Image (cartoon, rainbow, N blue to C red):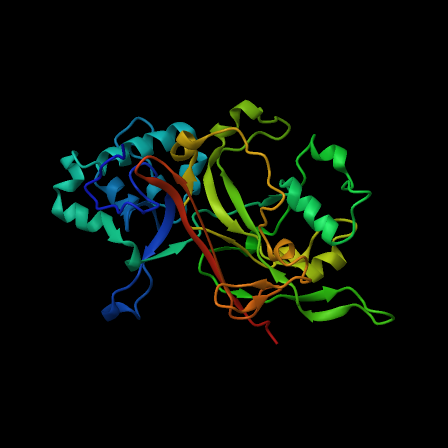
Length: 357
């Protein structure tokens, strides 16, 4: 049975009391003060169609556990300080917030002034990147995506991908560009770069002709490790704060030209979009299961869906796409289905704008 909050939560909401994802937001200025300086960012938690302002909760002294009492973590403009505190702090915060928002808890429910200060409608806030991202590693983890792309690009060796053996023994990853990770809703400018030369011509330079999306998940890592001291796999959950949706935008023609021998560069690093709400591992724990077998027909990008542009995809409105066109908006969403509730991620969106002249 779903938990009950005094905040109204619709049956199809991604953000019931079982979820309580963390993010960073800024209240939108009122129309009468629109020209004033923007209000500072602050941490929040999603509940239904509202955002709980954690700075207001902390100012009221309601985080009174042994770890968070008198902590400044919810008076910051990012979640970094809180995330770095580790899983005991994350669980203490979740327990406190879940209690405060429960239907039978009067502390916030019956305090009109505090409730009005602490609970803001989502339509009245601007969501921001939840953390200051110091580093970003992209892992090539889907076997069939790997095989599908290599098949499309004609790089399979007798039906076997190159480096097949190491695939099952080590994580394949490379460092992305942390400075171009953007929050959901940010417009994506079509990148310019080089593509394969044709005939005796030099490499093409200009806007990408094969702009693609990639449906992915991203993990937000909290406490790190000392240099030279590895993290045991059995302790991974103590370091992973939570997950977000991610669209790792890709310029396929640029990638095909530049990725040999050291991997993708400008064709992958121009923009990466993440959803604003970090869903914690504790919220996802009821849905933990063995990894399902990967489906070779489960496609997560236009390269696979259109066979690199050879088979245009017909959309619901009757138009066709080989790759993304200017003006297209990509909307990703996902949720876990519980008994009478969802634990969801909201949406991860981005609209394609023309290349800069």
